[in-house]
Length: 316
Image (cartoon, rainbow, N blue to C red; front, side, top):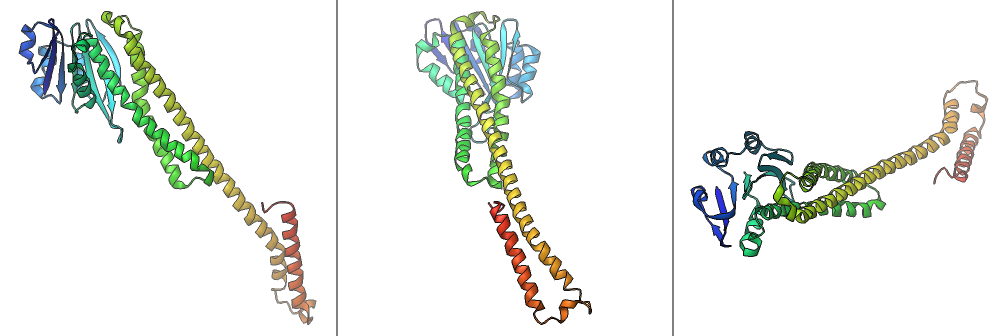
């Protein structure tokens, strides 16, 4: 499906245009949106707009890393949109020309719909031109990154508050799941940040100068997102280290307790082993009080060792 809106030199919006009308319409600038285009519609990128073959090839092959390429007077951007719940990444391609922008995407994009709606609500916004329209699309895309990162931050904050009670194996699975989601976000946000840095510091787009403040604002948002992700990664690393330390300390405590118990029973087992050999010439076997004497000796040894270990703090 192809949707076209144009802004005339008489400062009016024109909607529901066709590709053929673009040849004769007196427009100041226009926006062509390819949403899940069919094969014959895709060919218009070459036959009508005459975009560079490499840029057209990048549109067809998903999923490209966010980037910006310059082809003479047309600038090609690969952007990513993110679904908040599943963190599914969808690619959105933008061609920025002298008096137009062309967006190309296979999946429905709420961000593009919001940008189109905002443009058509005001003639004054339309006067800002096609680079402002491209800014609106990019701004809406980046705004959708914040809820996904905030959600992961909240999950980590809840886990950190409850970490005083000890971390369970389930909690550790959640930590690694969050870390995996952070890595998925990082693969989008960091390249997007680099893209905005190149865009705002490039002299290849002459008309961009009046809009650099707007694009710098998006870049600041991406910097903030990068810092938030780094903070979240540090939190996951701290929680992981806390879990490992907690388990190691718990294991050491268990091993110390078992070692103390084993040490106490060693002399008792030694005595029981001697008097369990049943040799006929053992002198104590014929003594009437031998059984009670050995039990008393074993009790005294066991209690004495227990008291000694306790005094040393081995049971703490």
